[in-house]
Image (cartoon, rainbow, N blue to C red; front, side, top):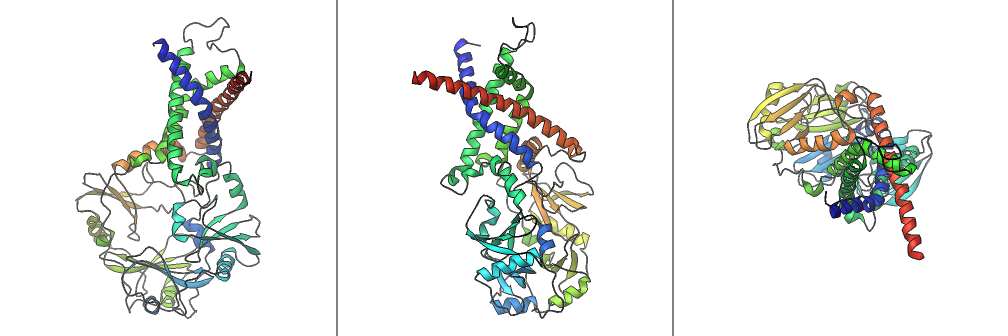
Length: 498
């Protein structure tokens, strides 16, 4: 290597490393925390468990009657009935051409527009259950635990503090009055050294918010450059044949420099892998956006959701379910209107809109899923166990908390994007899609960053041991770099003052 190129390599690693190692150390430590405590979220299971059961004896309007009272005549995107707003049974309807939910009192047909303090506290009280004291904690647009873009439709958010053993903070939607997030105190505290720090959320919700993605992207890129430069320097300085006068293969005599050299050689690859895969998690400059056409879900389902006069009233549906139901959800599946009766746990029960128990015709569903794209279906695979592309993660993780039922269909299309669509054959629900670019993202992010590899995930605590040990090694590399950088800066500043 030419002398001037070698000098630049050393300088790049030295000065980029001073900044990068501080972030590396923070990312390694916070990453270990995130293995066990994730960013606050309200999972579907938690939401259902905290909803009061629907009362079959209550005088609840039928869905068509309630929609007529609210002045909603056209097709819908979705329709739910639950005691989800103010502790009372409400219909939550999303019209086909809108994004906002319309909240309708299921007993009176009145549209509940204003989410006032009384309604907020009633929602929180229904969630918390009897005997739990609570108090309102103000209204916010966004705070440290509500940065998720999925909450945008619910802002402003009302906060309510529960006096329960977990000191849970609830976030209530300012548009529907539903509880949309819960955050126990332990989860909040751990997040300050976990996800909140790992994702650089101090740059969210303030003047830096428009630049947050660019900040994360460029810090990751600078980290990759510093790591690559350091790896080359470390290999160049290590004597694989022979030793230095000190008897060591490393030229460095000081404790910090020597161990930074050694840990760098041992953990440079895992550091580089994690920084690179962290960058991939951001989908930088939309490199994983394939531009694939949207799925034609309405065509698959035989049109939009329409509620008719003959659709059964809640009392009929709840009686047919024969069990405690927390939510009724109307869906359009292959030209039929069906109702999912959801309990506090387990799979939903499928009812016809008239109130009879029913099932999905698999032959008809196979014909229906073929309408999702104009291209032909190459094959339909039936997955009875998780694999590398369809699997479940713990609820607290970034990719966890969503339903991943089995068995499931993988509908493989013969299109230019090599599209896969996962469909639940028991409900006809489209669970997700994948194409070549999304599968590339799965390998470059989820596999490399979280080690979402079934042979490890299915053999815990082996997964925990491997990731914690590698993280500790990366943290040691980073922290020795921080100390070296701090000392070097101190010398430079001292010389400048002199």
